[in-house]
Length: 380
Image (cartoon, rainbow, N blue to C red; front, side, top):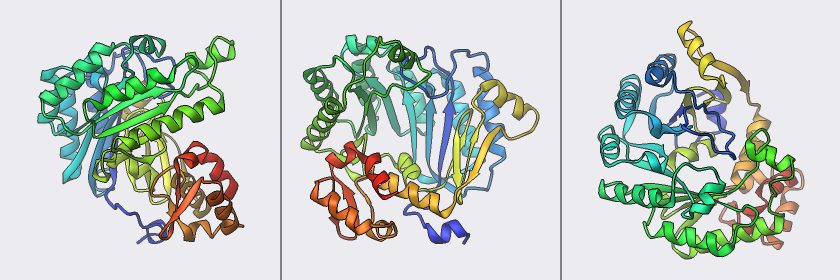
């Protein structure tokens, strides 16, 4: 067992596989994930992913998750999607209960497409609904309507998908609490297995970021963000969902995102596609953030790598602190005690209602989630 594995044995030893589909029909003004609206390489894109996969055969063992994210995976033609899944299954080994997640945009959803995805092995869908109000969708620059959200969710039920995650976005200037609660209420009528609820983040370099710099888009103040956040947590917990990560809610422990938990627990994962990240044995690496450069590297028989870094034991310890304070599993008290004044800081946080101790672990409260990164900086 290598240095990393011997000292940081993961709860879940199976690695995860991520594939980044970098194509979108339109770019949302808040999004800073890598994607392009030029689809000239889309038809042959799956072939390049298979070429990249060939570099990693037998290096990661048996995967128990496959996550197709983007970008917009649902822009892929069904035959390309099926070819991609088939090629990955031929290249790698997967457990019998592999979780295969695909991100879908509501206006791309069709009954035939869903059935084709099921036949290819997809058993979990993450739907980018974002809101059930057309005026909010328009503000967010989404290309679908509230009606298309409802139709997509209805089709998923009709085609037998019972492991569905709904993405919603909230916390922007001018939004009313009643509108947001109506979004949550509408989502819960479909009894999704999972909910991801994101506070709007205004990122530099995005259209929203530029509008903010020009004074044409305001942020919510911290107190308003806190109010919206705690309202979200209380509402979903009161309806039977566990708040297991800062932005993530699940109807039960087994309905958590198995794949995303790998990122938070330092479990190995392999990322394929432009801008995809990978991690194994204390080393993190990531691909070039360009479809053209990605394709060119593979045509030349090279890995499409941008950079890599070897994480020190101290970096891994700090990352475990930051991620632990963002999850309901928390982190071991033994880790807390490795930091200067760890016990004293823990006592202060308990007194302020930001964490609690459960067994041998320090666990953040919903109030603690609001300032999770700030809590981590108190220790670091």
